[in-house]
Amino acid sequence: MRITDGLSPKKVFYYFEEISKIPRGSGNTKEISDYCVKFAESHGFKYLQDDSNNCIIFAPSVGCDKTEPILLAGHLDMVCEKAPDCTKDMEKEGVELTVDGDSISAVGTTLGADDGIAVAMILALLDSDNKRPPVEAVFTTDEETGMDGAKNIDISSLRGKMMINLDSEDEGVFTVSCAGGNRTRCILPVKREEYSGEAFKITVSGLKGGHSGAEIHRGRANADMLLGRILNYALSVCDVRVISVDGGLKDNAIPTSAEAVVKTQEPENLKKAVCEISEVIKNDYASVDGGIVIDIKEAFPKEKAADKDSTEKIAAMLSSLPCGLISMSRDIEGLPETSLNLGILKTEETKVSAEFCIRSSVLLKKEELKSRLALFMKAIGGTVVSFGDYPAWEYKKKSRLRNVMTRVYTEMYKKEPVITAIHGGVECGLFSDKIDGLDCVSIGPNLKDIHTYHESMSISSVKRTWEFLLEVLKELASAS
Image (tube, rainbow, N blue to C red; front, side, top):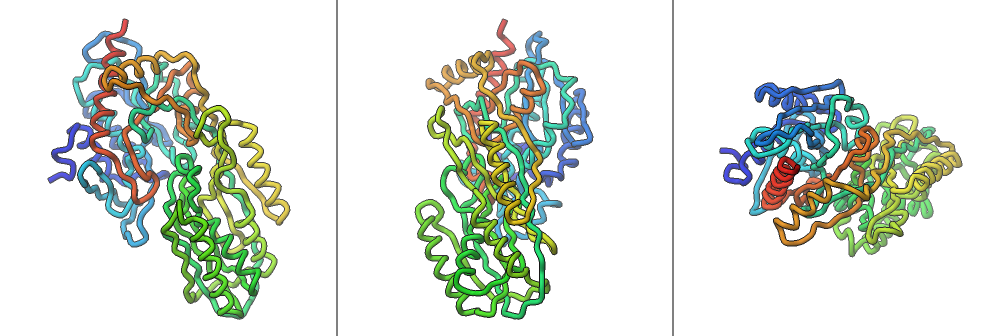
């Protein structure tokens, strides 16, 4: 008995369940890429697979004599997050699906509907006799960690000039522009020394988290940055030395938990300080992130503590570096313009690194944020490294594809779609850079809480999005 038996559209959910069995976190995409290759081979389709595990499948038209192909795009990788008590090894195991009414989710982990539902829809389409023009199905890898697949893919074999990207999370919303961004890693050297005292682990947990592009403007707490507030306050009332600070797994996900291991010769003062600042933090975020839990327990570390200077610089870095929403767009109401998210905080023997995801629809603002990070880190004896830069996707004033999709949507649902730009990065910007004159729209069904273990997808929305996609392709196949 399959979990998705009885769900409609049948083939879409069949393929979604099949790929959900495959571990496919970013950087672990060979198996899912090979699955697409085997699909192409079994259906007699031409395909290309490259060293980045990108896969392109070329499928002929059905029910028409059109020769101009349509590009359908989705990414093969997913964000792997799991609940604190989940024991699943997401490097080796797929996700366990569960259905509750109109919602499908995964047990204790991210669902991977971002962007597994795109892969499932495209495979279901190619495994059907629905009327369509020729299809160039583009499956990219490592979208969630810098869009490296889209950066590396060779598009010389592609002929299509219109692309439907199936990597959006709100039904009836057509995304036509997005911010650009990069990853910037701040590196602080750490000197260690012998320090006698009692050791404690300070844990921050229970945060909502979320996608740093979609939820950054909601004012939610960042667990890594909360550690900075706690350490900074503790240092103001007692002598503390940091042993380690760690939190977050993905730079594009707002961290839901983090921990600091410290030593002190004033244990009661430290406990009191943590209790006091905890109440302040919980009060600050009561209306937007009400589940915050801050705890302090005895610890037994083997590592030496950072010296006083390094400890103060770690606290300064985590409490003073900018993080979160920087500015809103002046042109589009409700759209964040510039932000950054500290997503990965990691301690090693000789350094602490803090990795940020920077986003902005204005190139100059993006560069200014990089400069701010670099200037601060230089002032405290650190350095920065930037990588994973990707361009903004600019709005196309004249778009045949957008016009066709808007007309079809309006006819089907008796209302107009929402045409919007987003703060999150999508691969359309990279493809628009690579393919001259590309006409692109991004759509998708309703997803909630992506990049968290609360992620879910609306079953009925998948059905409507699928039916809409078929009608758009039918219209493109029929157009003169």
